[in-house]
Length: 150
Image (tube, rainbow, N blue to C red; front, top):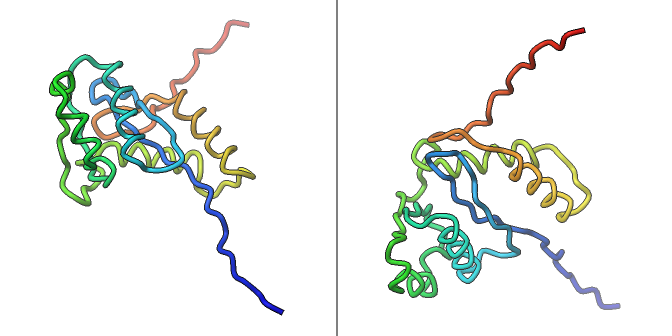
């Protein structure tokens, strides 16, 4: 008898995100892997949303790939500089890391979803309905409702 070990298939998703420092709006794109081509597609999404601005990068390898450098070097993208945070920046210097921590706490920590697709759907619902405060993201404080007249 011959036994063969097959490692489990890893089903994962990743999210690219950008936090608007003025409004607290989180732009995101969920993909199956952290690839440069997906990051370039995310940059295209950001250029459509913002005519000017800068992207602060947290040193993901895909963000420094040749494909990304070529995209940034195009004349139409020169208006959109990529600024680099120091490696291992804390949440004070990297507000998007704090936002991802809040997403994890609200969606994934100590929760079972049954499948990765269900977890992604829950994350999308959370992201689509949440505006983070800036510059250090926190969840908005719920406002109390005024008592209704009887």
